[in-house]
Length: 176
Image (cartoon, rainbow, N blue to C red; front, side, top):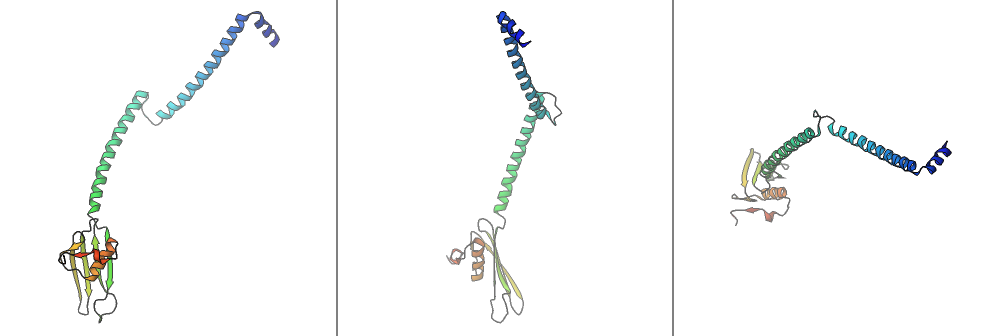
């Protein structure tokens, strides 16, 4: 049978050309069908979970979602700036020093605490324990300085809060 087809093709070159063109078109048709199938899979994936049945509707839906996302991002940026501003004025640095100010009392029951924000503003809180009772003192700290004389323990607490053990960086405003 195959031999008869070959002899027919040899006798009629026009028939051979028609068969060749038909095979080329068949291959082209199969390629196009494969591409349409792949595109259909991608479209189904894109439309999955949407109520819209056309491409234009999907695009408009995506634009609407993008605008909402941009709006949400702007609100989050604004909120983030507010939180950052609030955090700058919140207590961020704390130093605690325990000590015994008097030889007639036992243990380190007295303490000084320094609470500072990012700009080294805040306060010191000192508690002195004596046999008669406990006294508590507080002093404001502005830019790492106080307008009241600071004790050595308060200076050490401030130094610990700002991360330095060198108390020479801690100043009394009156000593200037």
